[in-house]
Length: 206
Length: 208
Image (tube, rainbow over all chains, first blue to last red; front, side, top):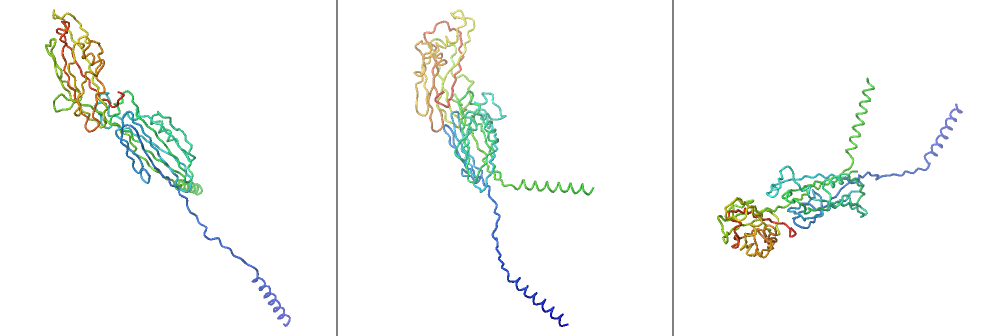
């Protein structure tokens, strides 16, 4: 009985000693807090300017962007010419692909007597046939590319813009410069009071 | 049957995930719509003393019936630009045809050329007026047939160009013209009729 009691005590002592050793081991805890996930931004900023020479009156709406930014030129005549500049900036923090869609509308508006004298009709305007255009892209590194040679029709400009896919890094700027003229040609009277409308969507996709 | 249904459900679920992912990519669109180029207008209307401005006058302004050498007729036409562009200048020319019926016996030339009769229709007075300024037009017409006079032949082939217009306010002007059958015209023109069309052109540019 004594032997049994002694054995149990020994086991208890050894166990207690072993336990004391375990609790004394070194330990260190590090934390990694503040890990965050912040979404980047993709913010296309557009601006526009318009200047012309010859007959006409220019008005520019929202030139700094923030809303539909566009221009109008009224009362142009053969000999009138102008330059429109769209400046596009990737104001976000991540790169995106810029694409462009241009649609044009040619309006006859009022049929003037000089137009009637040429047997003009109300079907559509002729300004898109008589006006000529050129288009240049200025890249983020300030290099330029002639997308449409001056003297081309608006249909050529439409095709060129619709084909555009340009990668824009954060803060990068791409500029499109459209030049136009209404040349002095035979039967200019066809276009009296006619109008040509350019609707453009600039889209920056991630 | 059960495994087929599971496959279909799985495909549908994956598809919906793909769709959601595509729509969720970042995108920003800026619009520049309504950029408009509009042509102006240049619309000349004329009148001959009445109140109504017209695109051409069918009523004769210069008429001489049973005229004889030395007879003359006077007429006046007003011009106004109804367009919204300023024209640079006016230009006046003429066109004509001749009617030379057979006879009378005293008509010493049948089938008289129109140019020949027009050369005998002499412009004795032609004054263009705009604002408060009058311009003597005759010196501006070249003597195309070299007969020492300014006549309808010269007006047709040379014309009177670069007649000025006011560049402020409403553009209005007028022409006063007197035509005389040359006192020295011979019997060649007896019974003949010269049908005259006056042509007035308002031009946008100085090069025209």
